[in-house]
Amino acid sequence: MTTEQVVIPDIGDAKDVEVIEICVSIGDRVVENDALIVIESDKASMEVPAPFEGTVTDISLALGDVVNTGDSIATLDVEAPASNVEEKTEESKADASQERAETTPEQPVRDSSPIPETPPTPEGSAISPTREDGSSIYAGPAVRKLARELGVDLGRVNGSGANGRIVKDDVKAFVKQSFTQPQTLAAGAGIPPIELPDFSRFGEVEEVPLTRIQARGAENLSRSWLNVVHVTQHDEADISELEEFRSKLNSEAADRDSRLTPVPFIIKACAS
Image 1 (cartoon, rainbow, N blue to C red):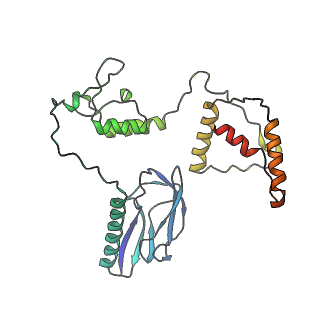
Image 2: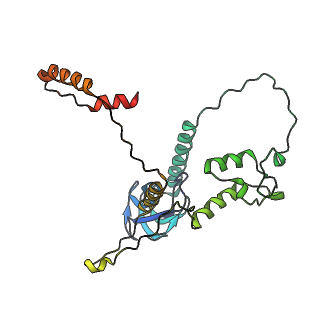
Image 3: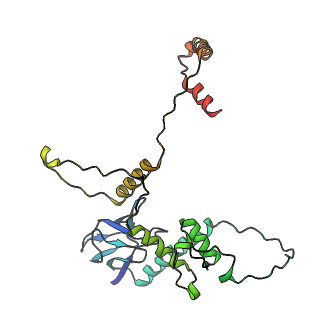
């Protein structure tokens, strides 16, 4: 009998996911692929299965905890020798590595012909935009690419590297800080808060907390409602000839028990 620790597997780019359900209790016996917990990110929820068979002796987390890849889930007593468990773990890691290698796009073949040399430019002093105070922004290509992907203005990021150089951790910290700070809407972009009535006047009230997905969805829907331009446009068109043509087709299609509506013609007109 050996004791093995079960941890959160690789969950990709998801960070700080919430534990919304614990599927086992101490003393339960599980087999491989039995659900241990359910975690929820901003986009989806997923079960974390047991990687091997065993008996649950300890649970390392609770409902509502925020976890990441590698965090401990539970401890299992395993009857199989530890070497077997390690082999399964290594096999699963090898399979995951192979899948990542298969999905990695092939790098284009570079032309071996000589390329004219250009004067090297120091990475820290590469042609850089400047901040509002006139100082240069020092950041490497990888950091600039990350900032573009995350929509971060490097002029607002304070660098922690040598000579104020911006590193990836600075960009990530800036993004995390922007999520924790309350966002202020531009003048005219928001709507005045609407005071809700006292619902208890109408009967018993039960408050149910939103899931993480529901909360993020509500925020995005509210943001879209505020930012999308609400316009209704009316156009008039003479479709007399179209109706004559449609009636002719319907009379020909009567034997086939089919009917042609104006919708396909409208779609065709809009697409054209």
